[in-house]
Image (tube, rainbow over all chains, first blue to last red; front, side):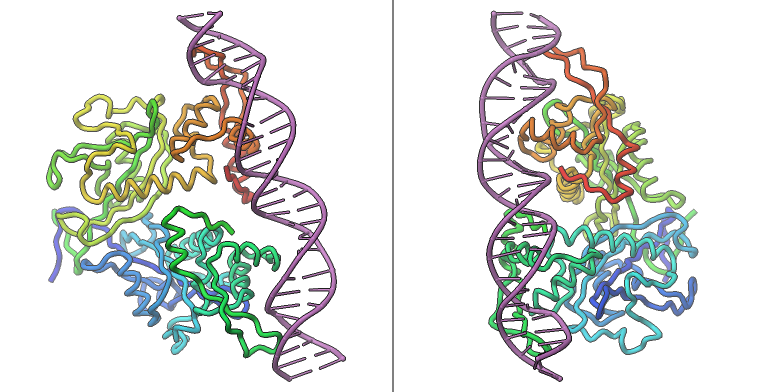
Length: 229
Length: 229
DNA sequence: CCAAAAGTGTTTCACGTACACCCATGC
DNA sequence: GCATGGGTGTACGTGAAACACTTTTGG
């Protein structure tokens, strides 16, 4: 069942840069390639776009296939289409980046460490194709975006403490932030609902849990609000 | 000379949103389609990506073909790949947006108004495909970007007055700006070189001409500078 | 009682904003 | 001399940044 066209066509893939929180770092999901080219090398999860699915759907499908993850933040990053980027021929890839919260998703990756694994963003092995460039682009986008959109919460469970969220900001921006000033700013958005619950499994004062007010966020966003942090 | 593949492949195009300055407004270049689908409708300039050219090269080629323009600012916007966006079949388009300065480029478009024409961004006719959505995305991007990158100058000749540049900002942002405050900010970047030349063809006090300091800009950018306006 | 992180206010300084008049030129 | 845009400075208020101690809990 071959398909024939009058003009030559590039292949189109989607690749996903999946971020998650590690103990002391930001991590990226990589897949070890089982087939040439770059057999045995680490690469971003991805695959070919099917004819009956949109680009975003393709990205979600790949993420589901590779990691078993469901509820994730996903956004288009950039499209890479240089002529020589794939030795097999002309392949254009639409890159997406995703933020996931590991505690919620028991990731398939964890089950077979030889196939998929989480790597700290500042200790990445040599990657297949132009995937290092894609990853770098994603990190830059993330750094920029966290300054004016509350995407940090996507890396955390639904209920989280302010210190956890601050750690997210510090990991993404790569710098320490002043606790009092940062809290003032983040709380002044009015998007964090304080709960009457506290984390209890810690060996120090129990920190208050917060929840993101998504309804309010969508409302404010529709009114053209600005969330600079 | 047909081309055959094992799996079905989408077609890949590039579309360009080309902005330029009008007398009292921001304008977009549109092409009237000569063939179905959407025959006779206005559309963004664009076309298929060739196998031996990168995406950016494809965009530049299309711009050259359609408008005869050479020196332009060009940046990737977004990739649109919904399943039903082209009635001919699956077509994925990588959209670019461009800023051009009309006085420098004698645009082919001007020669045959039935084929291509400049439209004010807030008075756009019904467009082919999902091109209205693409245009809207481009306008939003432009509005956002002008806040932290000095792209406004790309719409002007090499030598320009501060009032001209301020008009660019006002047109893109869609709001009046305070002259004194705006000048303070734009000059405080240190990126505008005052020249010892003045516009002479005006019926009032001759305004000083400025030039963009590209070297300084690239240097500052490399050092991670912030150009918020 | 000690360790470890949570939580909380004030002062200072820089920057954004509001605002009005004189200048130079062409007609 | 009049119309048209060019060009300039100050006062005020808001928001960013610097900064240290007390509280709570578990071990």
